[in-house]
Length: 381
Image (cartoon, rainbow, N blue to C red; front, side, top):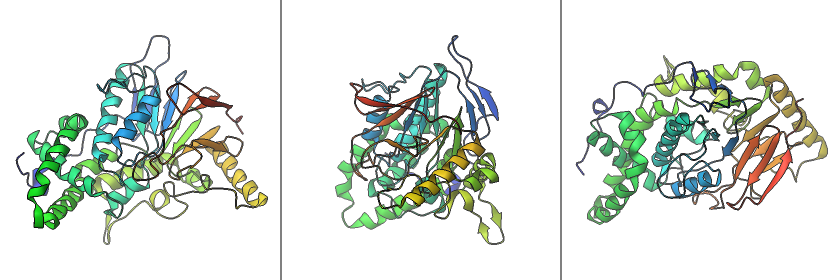
């Protein structure tokens, strides 16, 4: 592999191409088209579709594939083909950090997005706190292998003559061979490991700084997504978020990831979405353990959740962010579903589970033999 320069001038001068504001996807004749409103997507009408939600993946490509196969949207023959037909897949964020195959997972999801569209389905991602942290330059939770993946990917991008779409969409197919070749050559670094790490940090900074090509890729995705009468976000939506405007939140985060909101003091980070314990990506109000809470605390949380859902016009919310040691579960009359099971080997290394939604019916898929629990979604409040 030729060593690629990490110069900013060698990268694409324009961010990746973005979707039009409103689009209809191809669809089966028996179903109405999926209609997406917002850029990044904020409101989705997907009548009659099966919806599957997958929680935090944290750089574990093997577990990601397992979860997607479990959801019935990825072939199990190693060809990485979309098998979900008209299914709508929603991934709840935190693809970055704690694992070494982050870009490969993002690349795989892009490939599935393209394939799903051809079959009348769709793939969506919402950004989590680890996506926004990395765009901020906070690399505290980055796996050493992920720094190496950034270096490898920049070299691959150079080999692809800086054609971002081609390189990004195909990276998941070649990343393993790059990784193996890197491991073979790692011995030659010897005392230069510090230099290698610095190279990885620089590569990550180039890719993920506001305006960088991978940050611009993340900017395609929302922080909050409403599909029919279900709302999806990484941490949790609160009444003041809805009052502020979920489309406004998505637009501000996207703009910051692409350009940085420059003023005299530098880029300004959208606080309501990405900073603070009650921001959209950090909120744990709905996903925390309730065993140590008094009844009146639980009632208060229920009231806040009910108010949020009523204002946003949804019957239930799906969140990730907080690993659930009991697996995917619901709380507060099943008006909140918690789908982060800590499946990544960098978190709990637990067995993947996914949530399936069909109209008013939900089920947790825990195995390929379809041993699951089926529950009725809460009535609209």
